[in-house]
Image (tube, rainbow, N blue to C red; front, top):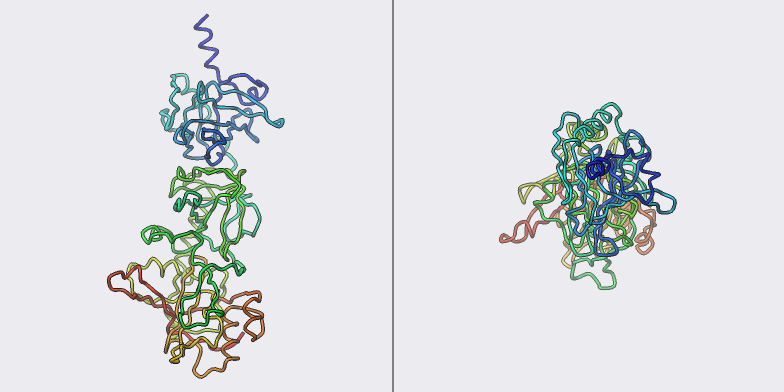
Length: 478
């Protein structure tokens, strides 16, 4: 009798049969098609959910909910299409939907590579899992079936960063570059797909004050931040990022529980599903919602291949480092003294290995300080203006100073002419009146300019690194 019970206990149910075995413990073996992001439950446990399929129930699959005592014990799926073996899980219903519940006290699981020809050694097992020789035939059978019936790669319902829209939910195939917890309540995921985000309309929700001490207090305005995170990323981290294509910051929805982003593997391609897109401080960002799910993708995934291929082809092009939104050519309102020098991105500028260097970039001017053109020159007559420059890869401050400022704006310009030129750079539709144009909608043109880097402190050359416009002039009006 005991032997018969052990045989019956070992039986794997097809998912279609398990769906009608409500309130019964069953054993399942299936293919993982997506996973939620791990998070702290409302109690003391940690939670995630996997969606699995098999030959009997391919669409939409069944959800398996896991509650365990620490995040490291949750299943950490390496790739979509991997196989999970589940023992003693309870079939339940919630809001008329059937799901499987993993109980840490008596359930067990094991994860296997889903590719044909792989070995039968699981890459992750729970503490109560006991593998058996009979497992191999079930695993091999699923691998063979998967080889003949490829899972939906999700290409048709995925967007790229060039297509995102504000306040819309979208699916993004991207590479995880970095995961960082700046503070207890500030976790950020940095992702990239090789594309440039579209222009983000500026919204004047500034934070920091300008730094020219002789400007009248009532004329000082707060400046757009250079990054959304509370402190800039270290230079050694930035240097690991691609310098072409937008690196998107992805946040956690304020109403969601703390998510286990730290278990995400950097350098891996994933599909993030049902992510919300927002614009914060004029920068695009993603927001992970409670309904967001992940698919870990292999390098041989079709969409991953296309992203990498398109990026490799782009960086080989002569003008591949120009922002996509600036094509076919930047505005003609500026010209440089170095027409034959190749363009680079602002991320190239930030991550250049030498502290002093010269560059030519295509950027938008998204802010000017000081705002009043009457304050463009110091009391001694020296031109000193700070521009906030942006391209799809980064945002920096660059000074227009002294003779380079005269070269940029032209000598002996009237207040009205300088105001029109400032508004032209910003793409504001306001009139020459300073108060009106400051708050007017903006559509900044893409311009080319030359930038040089320098430092202020010989004892802290990287910490005191600054940027200045040179060899560039405004030549006509729009």
